[in-house]
Each structure stands twice: as structure tokens, then as C-alpha cells.
Length: 114
View (cartoon, rainbow, N blue to C red):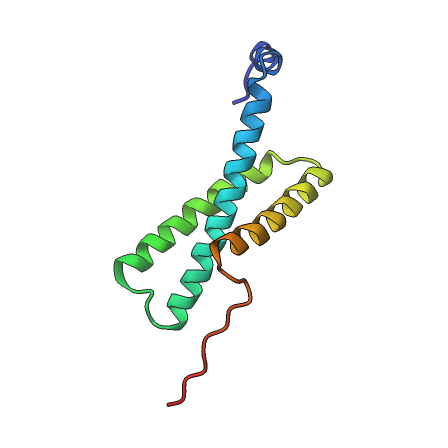
């Protein structure tokens, strides 16, 4: 269901539309980054045999809901320029976030002799 033209005109005039855009864009970047970190952790847990039981079920639940959210959000991004801007923002944010959090993207496990 779409909002009425009157509602859209009102929220555009009072600045709510711009604020909403800023809030949703920022939260989307955070969710994308969080999702990337969860997936990286999940891959590592799976490789090491730690993705088991309730943790595995909850991860699968989270993945299913995240996929639905990202699909819905993607439907709101209608121009190629907006898509490219979003991916550029995501890449820039991830680089800065990983530096701040001291989580390098190119991590490799230490070699362990058996």
C-alpha cells in the first residue's frame, strides 16, 4: 500500500521525508555491515564445526529474515545511480568500520602444526 499524495507532500514540505531517508540509509548501511560480519563469523564457525544446535537454527532464522528485508529494501532503490551510490557507500563504510573495529577483511588463520 502506498501513502497518499497529500501525505507525501506534507512530509516532503516539513522535512520528514529527508530525515526518513537519512535514517533509513544509515540504518541500512549498519544492517549490511552487521550482516556481512554475521556471515563471516558463520562461515568460520561452520568451517570449525561450531555452527550447531540452536545457534544454527537461530542463524538460519536470522538469514531468512535478513534476506526478506534486503529484498524489500532493494525494491525501493529504482535507479542505477542510486544502486551504485549505495554500493559505494557500503564499501566506504565497511572499510572505515573495519579499520575502527580493528577487524581486517583479509584475516587468515595461523598455521598450526599437528
